[in-house]
Length: 304
Length: 330
Image (cartoon, rainbow over all chains, first blue to last red; front, side):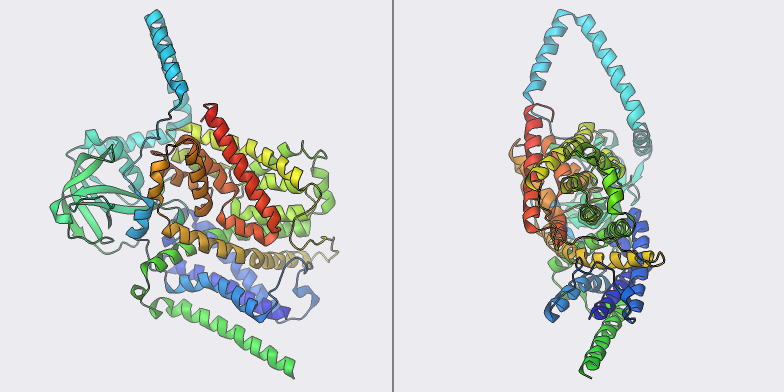
């Protein structure tokens, strides 16, 4: 009986190995797991092959070595029904992966997550302490304006120094990207720097008004959009697509009304600003729209 | 004769299974036209598979670490490293958790094995809740997601450390005398020939993969249904409420079952509407316990322990967030 379970388990493990192998061969693995995590998948493939092969080989031999010496601890399914149920459960991911690996998350998922139009400041904390502190500061300033300003200068220098050591490298990269954006006439939002570019455009929209921008994504609409509005959006992934957030830019123009949700498009237009839900966000106006095929790499990935 | 017939039947079943998988490997994507399948089903199954694929390497690491401990670490060795005083031992346990570079999928089999080998349960719990948060990868991703507000990063790490010790102490109080492991079984020392030890480790790891895997799969299935079906934008209106928001974000962290390496970016996407306290609650609670891990705990522990554990973690984290808010720290 035990050797039967070993045989089936060995085959299931080999099935998982085949699944990973196929996803790697067809480069569809990135449709599930961020490239950053792929080394772990290679490790898993290797281990599954060894475990599966060993189980299948061992199932043929009926020696006492063929099971680990802690039988009481591991449980084998007892009835035929539970055997079928449990092994079907294990086969479910393999079957989904081998048959349906072409699917890309669509706008119905996006609408449930909400779109990020770029980096947003954290909510203001409503602490009463802050207010009393401010009051104290005002009083202090009224008593001794010069001394107060001196203190403020010192504090500012302190903060600048702290910042310098801690966040220098990311700061530098962001500064570089910002200068690149301001220096160029046409901003192309690439897959590699999708999220950071969108964040930068959103943070510096005042300086970028009037510049050309080119961006690729799928069509997505929030429920309260007007007919001339859509978002050109991508799912931004950290580890696996279950943690994906939606990033995108608002597009406005009479020619977007007829576009269906989930159509993949390349938009070229001019950056302006607008107000959406009380916050200032960039918007692409006078858009030229080109319909495209679903890209080989539909997702974008966090860049850290 | 009958037995031989049965045996042949089973061989045929296994071989047919392998043939089927091989067929799907070669032609699987041409068998059905996905446009005939409802989009909701495709979204759920895609999210489900991504959670499984992401978890498999870490489950394998976890069961291997567990199997290595089983084969190579004796109960006596382990005992020598654990301080005698049950309460004083909580702090070193939290530090051990901080140094283990393991996330929440991998830590469950490891902790269960350590407890089987004689580590006191409450210390195992401390390691289980600290390891997924206090580790360099999680620090880096949280730092990157919250560059504009380092308070979130420090609050996440600090609260995880302190809360884990409190949780451990409460668990000690509840389970001082009983060991709530399923199938209690005294792990006796085996005396094998050295050449069998590696083989034994592999067999252990494989059996344990199947023990815990079934729970992982059910957990991932339920979590992916919530992932695809639950509308997060409905939460935005209550984000500013100091008492409701942390509870809501803890509930969200529980059902989404995200990896602790990735949850900071999801938390950041709520940053403009939710209070800092509720974001920290999301980032500390989720790695300690979530839907996927609840199922995995059921694989190893008795239901009573799982219930008490979830209750204690929930009360301690929510309580600390409310306390920190009332002290104006968050």
